[in-house]
Image 1 (tube, rainbow, N blue to C red):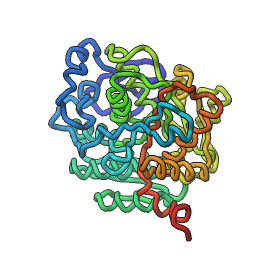
Image 2: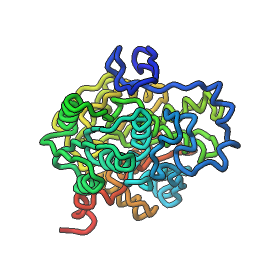
Image 3: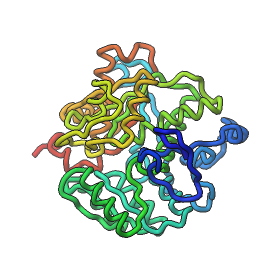
Length: 388
């Protein structure tokens, strides 16, 4: 394990959370010389059909401890209709709504719960605006772990219901995800639960990294020119970038990197604000408000990591308002048959704007990562698609 700020190294013999030296995220590092002998395109053929096919680049050492619900290996499709409509010739979508529990969160929680299982942990806790809580509850039930969730009271109804169905202890909190985070931290300290909050432990990002590994494999080990990602806490974009860095070290992709695009809600855009001001560390966003629960994160623990990714990749950051998100949801559904969460609508509209301002070039291979399903948001989107 390596501190993302200081570079200080730590052993992996016990559960880790933030770096002891800086209170910043830890990132897993691997022996690429050793891994390169088995991690080859040829050897990947015939492996299991989920994210654990990339086991050499995942933190669980004992295969018997893996907790899986079949996460990963999600569809990667060319969008022929939207391609014409938005004038983006090579336009693709990675559809994470096909994961267990309906979102990309399944990947990170499979990795984190599997590692907790390997360490013999029996109780876990997390704050969540919705999808992560559902995923944690599902994987914890399969692992026979006690799951404790702290959620804002206005989190989507579907997320509250699924957590309860999976047997989690659901605690509703007045306020935002940051308030849920404070309550979660108190519970972790009081009862000794392992806290799997976003980027406050090093295992979830490794699971989400497999999105990038899959994109590379599904593109026949080519690197896309642009990846557009809806961003709240930022674990997903950090993981995808980490995937391409590691694949380069394994000589499986070229040194070219995709331009990474952070998309945030107009009503909660701390990372966009920091990017525009050229500030490495973001300031908490006051009074966050957006339909997209997964993007309503007032401050990301890994803000400085995301800042570095945007600059290294020559990427950008962009805001989308809630009405635009719903327009994007409608476009993706009516043109490509994918009923996405508002976060998915946000990246569609971001791609439209970025093509119009020529950030996206005519020949660019562009990948949208749809992180979740609209079926978690039906109560919130009923008026738009069905009327009063």
